[in-house]
Image (cartoon, helix red, strand yellow):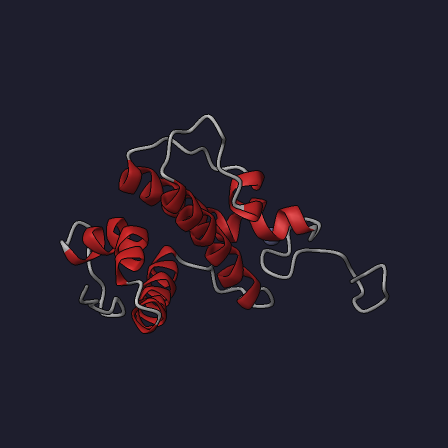
Length: 154
Ligand SMILES: [Zn+2]
């Protein structure tokens, strides 16, 4: 933005401490550290895996090939990471930290939309295969509910 003369400086809009590169804004910034750490640790617990927080994982949704995971779970993880990026970009120009609780809320909403879409196309089975790990975890109370977490019936 600074190079395009749209801004006077090239500092991060959120923390105002470091140069606002794409890598910084989507992965390294202190203001989003908590979101990524909690999201990656949640996914690790969900699938009993050990993903490591990295730009490739968080910004591009790249899951290491050597990690043994069902294809649908892999796709779900990729979408989960891109949801994290979407939340960050939405709050790009604010100083409000993107939170893990917001990520849970957006993921729950996505599950609700996908449930309708899969049901309409007669693929409820595929919906359950894709979303069961997340929904079971949330609905079984393993994740501490917040007032913003909607309850989803499967
Ligand atoms: Zn920053």
